[in-house]
Image 1 (cartoon, rainbow, N blue to C red):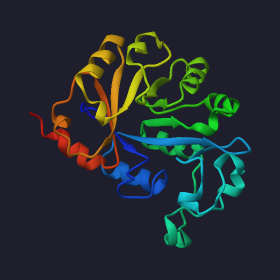
Image 2: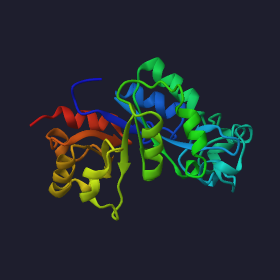
Image 3: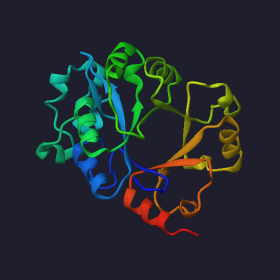
Image 4: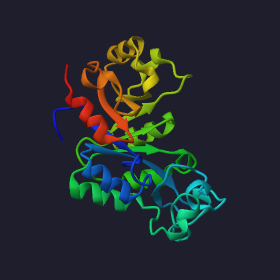
Length: 241
């Protein structure tokens, strides 16, 4: 880690390698990312796995949902896009495997909790028990109820709410279980900086490409960038004004 604002590689270096795979995570590490953003889902038999979509079709070709499959079934599905998956050796990793990798390289994780956990919070609770993460790791979600579970079980873990256009920024000050806000870069505007500063919560912005002018001179409330292109983002940050 450096003194710069931390750069989290979105699903790994997903601009260069297949998302949420060890290939993407290793690529991000080699490109100088400060951390990894990943997605956490739950299988039918309560395994926590790293995969973005609830539906498996886009990257496996199977018309099933993650929470309709056992982990043994999921682990047999090659990952890839269209024709290329026929030759792929990539598989959906377990959360435990990724945590072990992250701890080995002291690589902070931004763990986004996905929809399959809403109906199975016990799997999340079990996963949080005895969980050790690299310093700088945190949990995020669109689902406030999952952030409450994390904070209740492990109050020392940092949490972030991912906002949508329906989110009431004025309520931030009352959300004591939330430590930060994750927002699309379209929210990089003064009113949202002020709302976050007033609530004492930092901002991380996603969908960053590395071409944004403010990367070299960010607002004080910004505590992280989330990007498919960690090397581009790092280079832009070095161009201090």
